[in-house]
Amino acid sequence: MDPLHRYDAHATIAPDEWQAIIGGRSGLLRLVLTDDGPLTDPDTGREYTQPDVFSHLNARQAHRLADRLHALADQLTTTTTTTTGSARTTS
Image 1: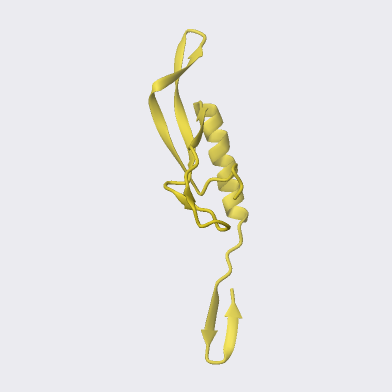
Image 2: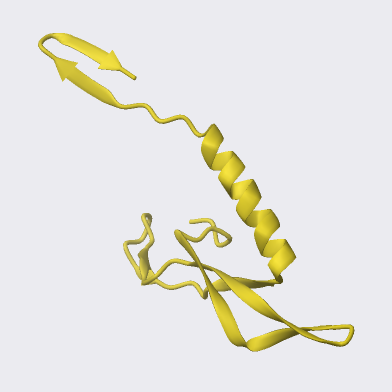
């Protein structure tokens, strides 16, 4: 198991966490990568957990990441396979 990999990601506003800016402060978003529970090692069968990994993003960084994720999602291809009679079609 790769110790840098997590199986889920979510984001939330971090209400008590701020970034100092000239003349004030700016709220932050917290991006969290998590396994959301214990994992099982395929070699030993033992359960283990890994700590969540997170990063704070300001609004500009969050918008840039969202735009990039959206652009990449639009490039993903989806293949579905259906069987009709003896013919198999892929779309």
